[in-house]
Amino acid sequence: MNSGKQLWSSIKNNQDLLIVDVVLLVKIVFFGLVVGLGFGPTGTVVSSAAALLVLSCWFVLFPRLVRVSLLLLFDFAVSIILLADLLFYRYFQSAISIPVLFEAKLVGGVSGSVFALLSAWDLLLFLDFVFLVPYFLRLRSCLNQVFRLRKQVGQVAAILLVSLFFLGYSTKSMAADFNKNAYVGLNWDNTVLENMGILNFHIFDLYNYIKEKNAKVSLDSERQVLRSWMDSHRTQGTSNYQAAAGGKNLIIVQLEAMQGFVIGKSVNGQEITPNLNKLLNSSMYFDNYFTQIGEGNTSDAEFMALNSLYPAAAGSNYIMKSKNTFQSLPWVLKGAGYSGAYVFHGAKPEFWNRTGVYPSEGFNRFYSLPDFNLDEKIGMGLSDESMFRQAVPVMAQIKQPFFSFIITLSAHYPYALPGDKQELNIPKGQYSEIFTNYLQAQHYADKALGEFVDSLQQQGILDNSLLVAYGDHYGSGWTNKDIESFLGMTQPLNDYTSKELNKVPLLIRLPGGRGAGVNHISGGQMDLFPTVINLLGVDKQNLFYFGRDLLNSIDGLTVFRGATPQGSFATKGVFYLASKDGVFEHGTAYSRETGEKIDLQGVASLYQKAKWQLQMSDLILDTNGLPQLVGKIH
Image 1: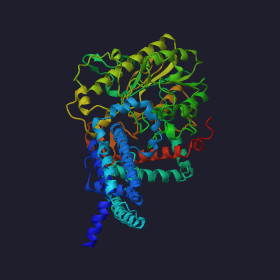
Image 2 (image 1 turned 60 degrees about the horizontal axis):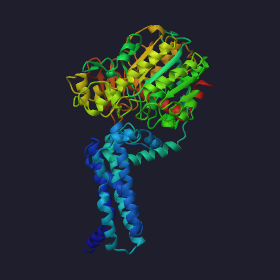
Image 3 (image 1 turned 90 degrees about the vertical axis):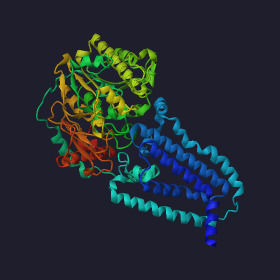
Image 4 (image 1 turned 180 degrees about the horizontal axis):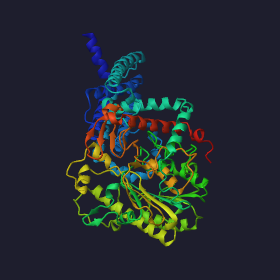
């Protein structure tokens, strides 16, 4: 009887701790429901409650006023983290990892995109403060104010023991049910998130980050293997189009959020991309070209095109590896006699740490927002039309041959163009507002590109250049219903067919339009570097790259980092969609010809190759290992 009274007295005197943790547990469940994970298994609630108690029980060691303040701060901090996770998940379908926090300063540059992701329901995460603050003020005056440290220590020890037991049990059970790799590959594997909750995701992520930060990584054991692999990888069975654009300028245009499904399509009798459609007649067009981005989005697309190395597993190489020594396209071309390499982009120069990384990439000059006349602003910066218009005269003054890398901006999420720039006639209600805006934005981007190509022609630059245009990543914000209606699909999108739509356009125009036509080989942004090197006739004997020359490969191997679960890949005939728990047998292989599931046995070796490439790319970047592999670079 006495022990029961003591237990009740302990609960009563710690009700502030219990109330905050119960409220936060409700918020964690709310997060799972909103992002589509549901309530999760019972273990999710139990392990989340245990984690909350482990993190917060220490506050009872302080006098009442201090502990109440700390509990409210704890509630607020976890609520902010959940809101950030909610917004991030809506865009990337994963929670925020530690490396991404280094990119938090980028939020100011995309504030419009962030606000577009917000929902009024998100305010529920902070509704409890309306009641908790006055309740705690009243509670503080009526609870036992006598502070007994020894007694509090005993309570903390008891709570910790029980909570750690449940956490340990949940961790061990999940490892048995899934795979220990689930605790490592948190950036692409939602197993921890789905089975132990968002809070435990962050706990394991922090542990992994600290462990990796202090780990000693060496390239020594893999150096010879990588050299031998590269010697074989460089060898092509044919030499199609070798030096077809030898000595010509290289102009690459990276198109913001341009997906392949808009090419050649019309809406209400209006071509969405009339200029790109026209350019197809004089270009090589790769219709099986995938985005391979990770969490670095646009910066990942740039990084792959320039280096043919994979994006980081989490975060952006532009931020985390900006001081590395790169064997990038600008360095390679300048070593081959090009006058210089230049970037044009109408956003703030510090966005994605471009000012920090471009010198390492070998660019001579970065023309960004402060360098242009801001005569027309759209979204995050200078309009595409104005940026192109101002870039051409600069390019006309550069000694040839040169390399110009141009990054468009106006079609950035949430695709909000001024009314006078929305030229497509799309009745309200035909599609969702965000998808309608996307089509309008891509139509505008196409118009700006068409004007740019015309200007190059007028300046006599076009036919003395190799012109490349490709999409950087998929768009977002709309529903499957929009896509199904737009494409006239008779069957709803599934996990596989939705990934097929992550293809982006790649057009390569040789001087005079030589070699124009459609190429169906499976490829991705990793493959642009070796393909361009071949066309320009640059010696590749001492180059290291993971991509393939799309003009001299029989079949591509396109390995995905973030747009699909880690370890997924595509060839011309097969698409393997990995399981989020990292177990090969839990994934699914599809025939790209029929869309039907096929046996996994035939793709096991390809899966191992895909995993190996990702691991080796990470190793090279983590050790700044390119100089060790190829010697002096520049």
